[in-house]
Length: 240
Ligand code: NAP
Image: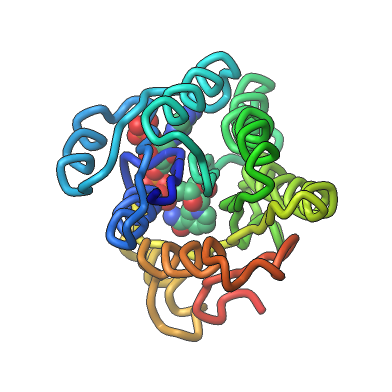
C-alpha cells in the first residue's frame, strides 16, 4: 500500500512543490487549500494519486474533517507536513490584536490542530512523520515581523517538545526553517529590496520551493527515523 502524505497550504508556493515532489516519489497526496481552489485543482491534475480538500487549518472542525477524508480515501496517514502559513510586515506598535491572533492562529494553532487531529491514526500505526515548516525568522527574529517570528519560533518549540513525547511511539517530529524562498509570500518586496536581501545570502540567490521539498523528502524517509526534534534550515548560508 502506498504511503500517504497530507500537505497543508499546498495550493501555491512551497506547499505546491511539496505535494508535487511527494507525488513524484509515489505517495498518495492530500492537497489542502484554503482559498485557491483553481490552483489546487490544477495541481491535482498533475499528481497521479491525489485529492484536494478545502480547510482553514486554524479551524479545528475543518481540520478534523480533512483528516477523516484522508483516512477514507487513503486508509492511513504516514506523513503530515504543516506548511500552511501567512506572513505580515508591520511595526510592532501597529500590529492590531486581531492581526496578532490571526498570525498565531494560522501559523501555530494550525500546526497544533493538524498534529493533534492526525495523532490517533499515527499512534494506532505506531509510526508516522510530522514535518513542521518554520522560518529562519523563527530562529533569529525579523524586525517588523514580530508576530510572524513569534509564531515561527513557536513552531520550533512545538516540534522539539512533541518529538520527545512521541519518540517512544516511533513518530518523528522535525522542523524545516527555510530562508528566503521564491514564492508569492515575498512578492510584496520591491526588486530593489529583494536584491538587497539576496546580497546578504552567501549562496547569491533565493531558495526555490524545491530546495525545501528535498529536505522534507529526506525527513520523511524511513532511513532517517533516528532524526527527531531537529531543525533543518535550507537558507544558502543566510543564517548559520
Ligand atoms: P505562499 O506562496 O503565500 O502560500 C501559502 C499557502 O498557505 C497557500 O497555499 C495558502 O492557501 C495556504 N494557507 C494560508 N492560510 C491558510 C489557512 N488558514 N488554511 C490553510 N491553508 C492556508 O507561501 P509560501 O512561501 O509557500 O509559504 C509556505 C510556508 O513556508 C509558510 O508556512 C511560510 O511561513 C513558510 N516560509 C516561507 C518562506 C518564504 O520565503 N517564502 C520562508 C520561510 C518559511 P490558499 O492560497 O488556498 O489560501
